[in-house]
Amino acid sequence: MNDRVRPDSLVTLHYRVTTADATEIVSTFDATPATLQLGSGELAPPLEVCLAGLPVGEHHVFTLEPEQAFGAHNPDLVKRLLLGELPNDGADLAPYAVIEFTAPSGGKFAGLVRELDATAVLIDFNHPLAGKSIRFEVEVIGIL
Image 1 (cartoon, rainbow, N blue to C red):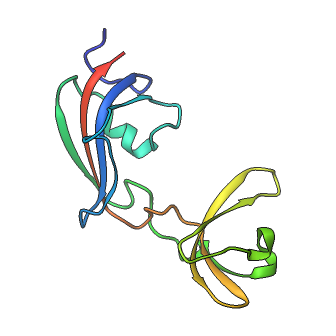
Image 2: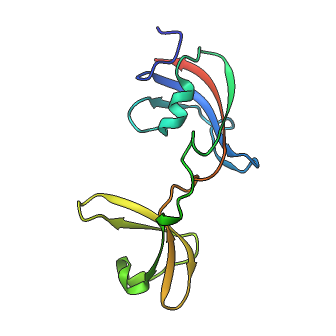
Image 3: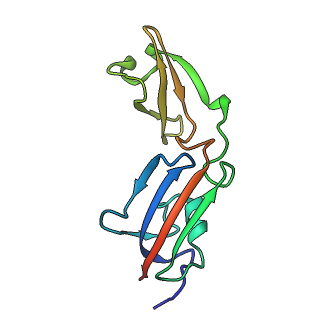
């Protein structure tokens, strides 16, 4: 059994992600701990970096600036589209809804509806946490 987290570890842990103003994004502290395979995309890479080298049983809190976490908010990734350009012609849209798009290569990506009117929608393709400082709290319970 390993006593410190490695980049490819299978770990059981409690974690909490909040914004700098304490808005909680996700937490397992009041629920079942998570078991995650590092390096597989189950946890965001910037958060995995924080885990490397941590020993079992310790509780840590990391504060990540936007550049260390999910990047700066890029205004070029905010686009106004006509409703007819959207999947299903924009039917059943609402502010803060997430729309899935298909890239020409066949890959999928999502955008968040920021504004909506009778003819167009403003979609933000940035990561929802882009431009925000993040607080990452973690307690490593075990390394499998």
